[in-house]
Amino acid sequence: MSATEPSECRMANDIALNLAHLPSGQAATELAGHIDRFWDPRMRTRLRALVGADAPGVLPLVVEAVKLLR
Image (cartoon, rainbow, N blue to C red):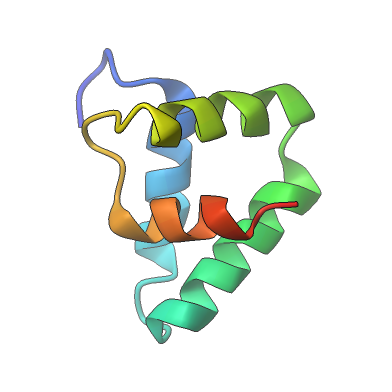
């Protein structure tokens, strides 16, 4: 991760790392729930765009969580 990494990517990755002890399906659900409950809609939109553009540095768990977002 670098200083130029988008903040949404960095934050989602940090949360994903904190959930890494869970089974992957549960971790993705928990991450998606957290993002849905606590992130501003603009942040969710930017994260979806980053994942959709295959931005470097996005963890696979974040990609799975974004698929679960409403």
